[in-house]
Amino acid sequence: MKIAALIPAAGAGTRLGRGPKAFVEVAGRTLLARSIAALAPHVDEVVVALPAGMALPPGLPARSIEGGNTRQSSVLRLLQATDAELVLIHDAARPFLSAAVTRAVLEAMQAFGAATVALPVADTLLRAAEEEDGGPSWGERVERSGLWAVQTPQAGRREWLLAAHLKAQQAGFEATDDAGLLHWAGHPVRLVPGEASLLKVTAPGDLLLAQALAAMWDASPDL
Ligand SMILES: Nc1ccn([C@@H]2O[C@H](COP(=O)(O)OP(=O)(O)OP(=O)(O)O)[C@@H](O)[C@H]2O)c(=O)n1
Ligand SMILES: C[C@](O)(CO)[C@H](O)COP(=O)(O)O
Image (cartoon, rainbow, N blue to C red; front, side):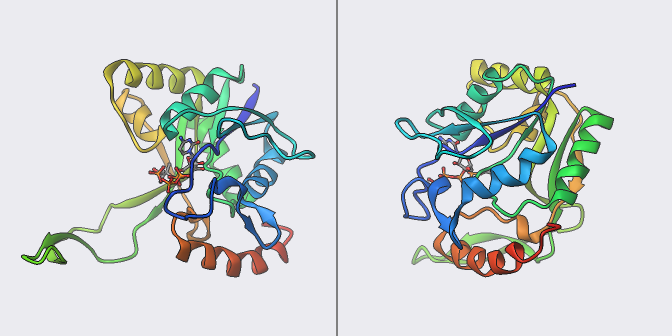
């Protein structure tokens, strides 16, 4: 069965403040180039959603389409731009994707139909209260056991994902990820343990972390 990697990379990178985030470099390579390189060896094609007016730099083993105004609409366009039966959806903003995690999510997708990488939460969790001056303070503890932080890749049968996205579009339902949409549409989604290094580069502090990680990552060919 044909497998495609779909990479939403059309975000503005507002929180990072460095222009479209997929084109930001870490140790000499863009976040996008790193994500494509991690996925290309495992799939039949890679399709990337880019901001309007931007082109894929030459030499990357991928083709591009124009993304939408939200991550969800970019992913819908990507799902419509391939005929692959199985797809892996991966944020360009998560540049440190290991071969082991990619293989694990592919295996889970093939066994169960849909899967996402996620990481069991390690910190104490709380819901913040708001003080009179507007500042946050300790509100109530949230039970941590059984909670996972969702990462990407998220993988599944394209027909399930496409139907879930179209149903959400019709219902005006916005989810922050594709596995959430599959669950909302009634499909069981298997969880595959992720890695702390699979962080999403979101705010300036994450970029510092990514620069430190890149030194180790680029020296380890097996990752
Ligand atoms: N309209 C959009 C918005 C986001 N994304 C992609 O979805 C992934 C996760 O989004 P996020 O980290 O929120 O990226 P940005 O939207 O760029 O960040 P911000 O919200 O700070 O602008 C990123 O790879 C981003 O490029 C996309 O393809 N299309
Ligand atoms: C898909 C995702 O990376 C899973 O954690 C996340 O939901 C993306 O969220 P964002 O709001 O686009 O940053």
